[in-house]
Image (cartoon, rainbow, N blue to C red; front, top):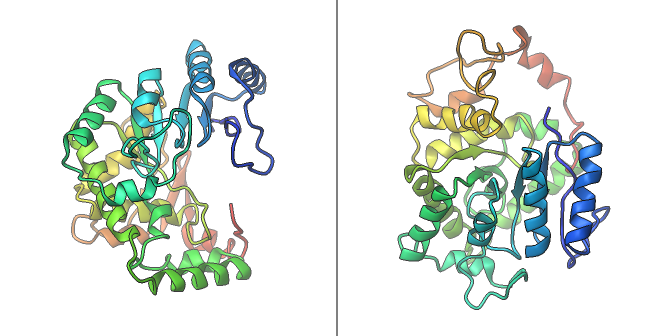
Length: 314
């Protein structure tokens, strides 16, 4: 397990139990503290400012640790210039395309900028080329953004069964409301962001698969990992590319490719058995009768049965 420090955020919208960094000196103190607690990576959050993020990245890299971020106040290009290792949520969190964006400010109109974005424009191509040049990885989290998008299916039935009744009802009511939206813009953005992840990958970028089980419910760990496989395939990746994105790419990012990430002699025997051929039907990823951990096989039906009606929010 790789433990990440709590969000490193800047002042702005208060988040319960999340301390806002006062300045660069405070950022360094936070890194020193969490290093003493054994963490090996750090996540910056939407309101962090330039000096603080620069300090976080500098202090992390002194220890060969990595920094990722869900950004807003800082653009992807600015973070890449600082040497950030990874960016969360594909291009959904990019504010690079907001006109007249002020430095270190999370702007209004970020979503609309993605609605209006020409994904084949020079500014998009230049940003992707720069991220690849700077070796900045990107983590796709299509599963969470699918929940905000009209026309998308509900979560798997087994995933819904895992939710506590209150959250299941909340999720289904919100999903129904979204399904009835007029002039919805999320379908436009969701499709564009899929295409941007494909462009980034095709340009040589390191793309990884995340899930982000947050939102209003329905994104359940485990099931959402399976759903990510289906969504990446829908985005235009081949089966082989999808599996690599979801396994070996992350191992390479963590510098653990010698022990995990692919099926090879000498690596950890953490495998899954799928009842079907993904190249024929990608939805067969849902039929996973056995999973292995340290070479021991586990019956997934029993695991699912033991985890009904226990999952809450976050």
